[in-house]
Length: 343
Image 1 (tube, helix red, strand yellow):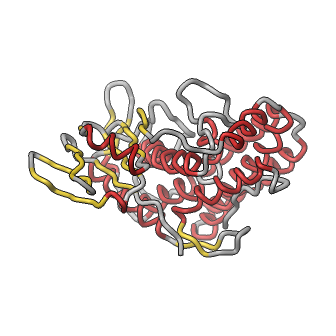
Image 2 (image 1 turned 30 degrees about the vertical axis):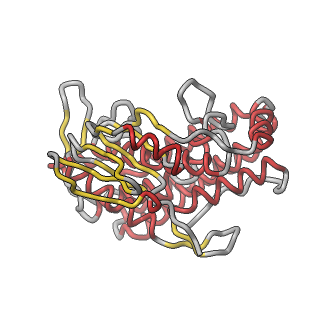
């Protein structure tokens, strides 16, 4: 039996989250609109102006709940999690390896390779579904370039060289990804990746999806006793969950990017769902945010066969499985970290 991590997403502005004995309640305009048993939850994600009672913070400690706070449009702000109860020996090993450049390269390389391969598979999948030679040609060309970059990654002699390959692959990928978008609305043309702030609707959706993915990856690492702040691919910075960002790389194209493409190509979100402020920041409206959250939960419930374990599991469990495999690698149970590659 698999236990799927359940997350409550609160998007209504002015909502109030409180604890009532063994449940959490969401109140809107002083009326209880939702009651959820605590034992059904492992995480809460609050978007925008959501107030949280002191009782919720008690539940964080007592029930192992994690609460993340994001802006209304999905930019990560902060996270509250229970006191760490991980294995101190595992964390000491994690920290020692983070100070070893050779160890960092050996752990980062498979993560980068999985990111490139999963992104390449997204492009090839889009080429198969395109049915239009004008779209197929650039998609396959980008996939070929990414295949060549995989060979360069194998030859990378240090971490900076590996990061350089990763950066090159990301540029090729996002240049090609616009051909995977079949919407006839001009606003969905993708001109590269823009993060802070997002400059077009596609980047706004990607940033929103990556914020959800970051919450899940950070929770997975903490659940196995690893420190999300100390990674091997991403540089350590105050307040940055570098290790969570590391394992996110395996899932960006596989989970987040494919979800965004599906919502656009199925016309579940439209150009009218986005607005641009005077500074050029593009934001989603509430309808688009709700559509993304519904699709996100549905995507996490889909089942796939894990290539290493050869077991069928929900996609939402994959970050937890990879976190455990990473912990086993750090302990020396596995010779190399088996990063996740899916078709």
